[in-house]
Length: 386
Ligand SMILES: Cc1cc2nc3c(=O)[nH]c(=O)nc-3n(C[C@H](O)[C@H](O)[C@H](O)COP(=O)(O)OP(=O)(O)OC[C@H]3O[C@@H](n4cnc5c(N)ncnc54)[C@H](O)[C@@H]3O)c2cc1C
Image (cartoon, helix red, strand yellow):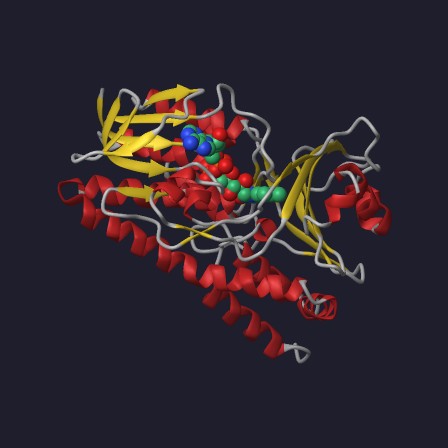
């Protein structure tokens, strides 16, 4: 069969690309390797800018109905200082994020893509090859190939775009019952050896737990013990979750990041994690999946008559929007690698609520990094006179 767009991967990036391309009038086939989407290693937090994007695309009702609103982030430094921050209102950006359980989110987006006219093939991992007119995969012939196949993207490798990761990190994930009514905040607990634990209160009773560490830590101990050791070290974690029982089986994934040279060629493009993912620390992934899908679908719909130029335009947008945020994420990595600096940074942010909230406004994409840093500088310069 002939189609305009072939998408590999049915996560949020692939499903949203399929939905928006189909809405724009293109014929779309999406192939997802799993027959049924499995549990995902993911904190399941969507930042406020992501909530605004769902609204703008008219998707909030279907994918976010009933989702828990998250008011901000709690940050805990290696010396166990704890800081509660609140998402600020940005320009057109709400003052909350959402907890979006997966794979329910992904399935809802796939349903929307089907309803828009995309053909979705589950349990399908086709062998893809270039032809003179575009791409062939099994019985499918397509003009444009979209790699939405995650951090270990085979499409990025096929296109010769993937690069070795900068940091070798493993991520663990498990959902656990909350010991107390879980407050509506995401949480980030940083330890003195650079390990960090993210918590997301999906409901009042259920907490999503993710741990990111050096893979070496898991060579000598099972994942369950690695998580329990952090719970034992931190009264803040122990307050919210019990140590994992022997029956608990955390899911692991490696690597926890991805890097590519470019995000498009003349006839193919990468979206979501396949187009690069710095680290789970800032919880960017679902938002990036959504906005890269939107940017690609818009560029391609507007420029179908000159696809290479449209794809070059997408690659430019992706690079421009990512540059400042990637730099910032790298800066965070440098901070958490040095416990004294992580402790000092938290003390600085704790000086004033407005400083802390501006910081979390940058992390949640409520402000651009430049605007957020300007707000922090302004608030700090007023301290302690007002
Ligand atoms: C520990 C951890 C915590 C995280 N927490 C958060 C968080 O709180 N908030 C947030 O926004 N992000 C978070 N992320 C990131 C987030 O999970 C990802 O950014 C997001 O899932 C990316 O979506 P995607 O559609 O690009 O890729 P994925 O969700 O990985 O989907 C890719 C899909 O492609 C399919 N596939 C792979 N190869 C093929 C193939 N050859 N053919 C067909 N299909 C294929 C896979 O089966 C999969 O379904 C976290 C990540 C980690 C590791």
